[in-house]
Image 1 (cartoon, one colour):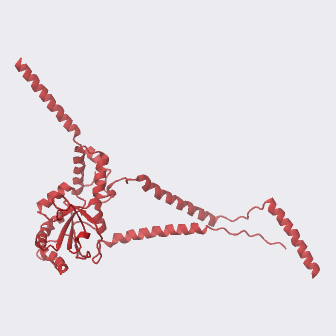
Image 2 (cartoon, helix red, strand yellow):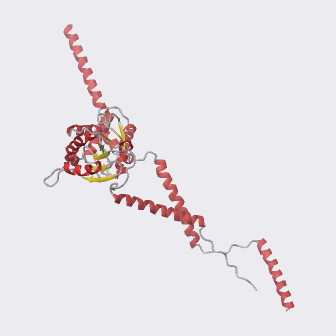
Image 3 (cartoon, chains in turn brown, yellow):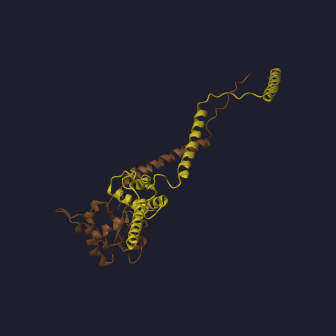
Length: 195
Length: 158
């Protein structure tokens, strides 16, 4: 009586299989997250805005401070305008935003912040002077703020309530035409947040 | 004599002025100087476009910033650092730590490739029985003799 010798079939070690599959799944997750983020557009209304700090241009400080953080603005309605001196459509709304700021500044309940998106300071200053902008303004250093807000372009305006929750995003400029009124449109976003 | 001295003095002033003019022209950055740095930077708005060939107004402004900084005597590294600080490291054509950026993913990919290759090799390779050593063979012969004795004993008992 003889038994045939059958060698045991060797496979890939289990640990190697697990690592390979984990790497593959990890790669797919990263790709999926990137695609999802790219399709999401800007931060959506209803989302709580995390704390970030805006460094301000000299002459455009907030209450004498050269930096302003979202944390210290809790309890106030915050209007963040993304703009740039090279952005022609931003020019269409610059004066409108300044007029709205002059209307709401005395209440002490609203803060306008201009975030200068990928711009150069000399041109930014020329722009601010040209349109008589006086509300706090500063550069988006290393594009941290625009990346956080997932800005799709300039101009964009974000309306944040007193609890730090984003309530509305305007993509494009506030303009006054036969059919639209910039001041009315801006007030329509701010007034409900003051109640 | 006075007239000659005046002429010499005037000539010296003129020479000095022209020398300083030449010096000023030498230190003023040319378009080539600006573009040499601009081609190492990317437009942060219109992605994948080097700054030296980017036609937008924003890029023109950034090239002027380079020119201004060169005029101020800033080095290439300082200018690139300024752009990275202002607009993020994505504007640099080479990441700040290229060794880490390129080496780590390369090593990870290499390890993965080796593991996959090894895996496929083992899956596909025709399996061959391991050669039996002399020692094993002797043990097997001994075992066979033992088995033969056992079978003979069993037969006898039946």
